[in-house]
Image (cartoon, rainbow, N blue to C red; front, side, top):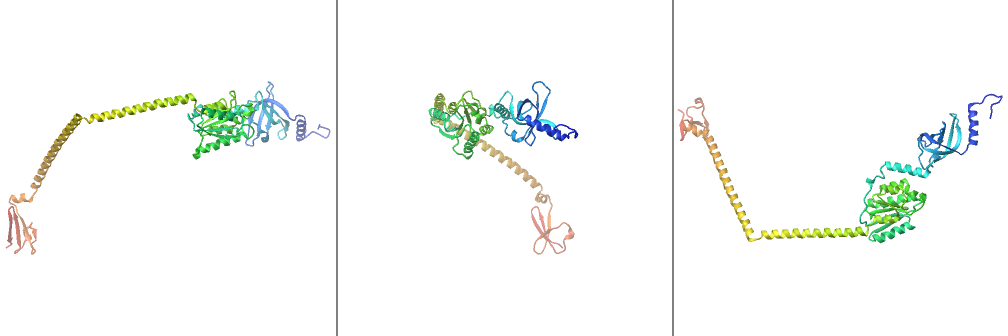
Length: 409
């Protein structure tokens, strides 16, 4: 659409014309650039700007809608170099030229590698790979759990090595798919189920082997899945990771308590070696013999001591010592009793002197007397005043030696 004699174009008309031409001629165009101004609001859409990487000052606004962003296996971020494939258009409300992105690919590293790197950095920051979190394996496990494919060489190699090295252990196999869409979910479910035996007090394994045989890097994806890594970390049972070949390394290896180079190596690490077992038996025998000798020596010492205490001369000495102790105790007791009696006599004499000093008899002995007026019943009342008595009343006078009765004239 071009301007003609009818007059100028409306802004909306121009934007619509340019938008139609862009979307027709620049559909599914790949663009390489460095991400800046990245944002991810609650809507789930991704908004960012692509900066030219060749040194030219050029910017391209970009948006990736939620439905497409949900398919990404890695997290875009500022500073990443990406190839964005999408449709060029104009956001007519603002007249802004932008790229509606349908797919994103990192430059210099594959999507899978970038996603794995980001997940490893995230889990490492949480401390999931911290060596101090690792637990020791039981020296002599009674039960061994295995989470792997029910078919294939891995399970055969593990079982064969366990029978060879430690046939006394009970083995619990939880067969799961180890690759494909169902693999990670099945591994997580198996780990959670077997850990319920610990909570319920069931016959839980003492150690777990989680792994699979070799394969391509993508075949090992289930053992790089975040849910699997967290299930391994949360396991109450120590976990040995034996995934792939010696050169393979997965996040499951980093999260497990022990990493084995192969499934067969996992079986070796889960069981005691013949040398270790013989050494343990030899050490146990030495400790047992030493303990027996010490107990026998202590028993002989106790017997000799008891025998020495039963000799007549020793018994006589002990009796003499007991007799001396009894005599000394008797002397101390007599002395103590005599001292206490003397003290009590002195106290009694002092109290008697104090009582004698305040006794009415002492007053009478000095020539004083007490006079009572007697009533008809013979009861007496002390006389303190001559006006208290009348003629004809009987009086009773107490002196130091006896009483005198008289009648008032």
